[in-house]
Each structure stands twice: as C-alpha cells, then as structure tokens.
Image 1 (tube, rainbow, N blue to C red):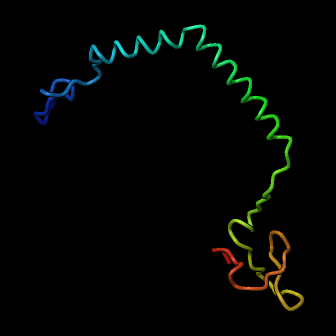
Image 2 (image 1 turned 90 degrees about the vertical axis):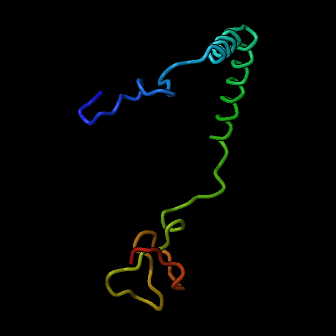
Image 3 (image 1 turned 60 degrees about the vertical axis):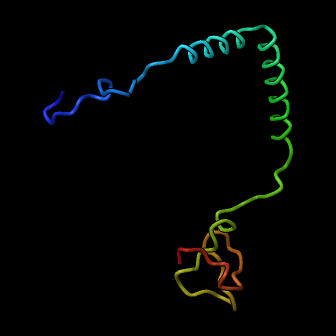
Length: 106
C-alpha cells in the first residue's frame, strides 16, 4: 500500500497484471511452431521475392500524379505588388486566377 491507502495494480483483487492464461500460452506455442515450419518459411520467402520484384517495377514506372505543396495546400499570395493582371504564386510561379486557389497562409 502507498501513502494514499491504495494497493498497487497487481495486488488489486480481480485484476491480473501481466499474466497469461494456459489457453493463450498454448495458442502462442502453436503459432510459433507453425512459423518454424519449412513450408511456412518457403511461402514467406516466395512472398518476399515477389514483393521485391513488384516494388522494383513500381519504382521504374513514372508516377501519375506529381503533387507540389501548392497543389495540396494552395498557392501563396505574393507579399509585394505584382506585375500583370493576376498575381503569381510565390512558391511555384503559377498565375493565380481565382481566390479559391489560395491556401490558408496569405
């Protein structure tokens, strides 16, 4: 008991902190035994092989969407005066034609 008169969590009745039941232990042993099986190791090896090949092919393909910070968050309004009819974004230089193209920071 501590100075406030409470028992530590592991000494409270009805609560078993950090203990494993017999059925949980049995299940854990069964799963561990199956993972050590040569068949499971072979299947995991084949899955890893194909995952590596698909990952390499995905890296070779050009990405379809190139997102810039402006396309995700909106364009940044120039602080000073601008030349022309419409202002240009401070980050990417694209011409801003509507107020909907601005981001949260102005």
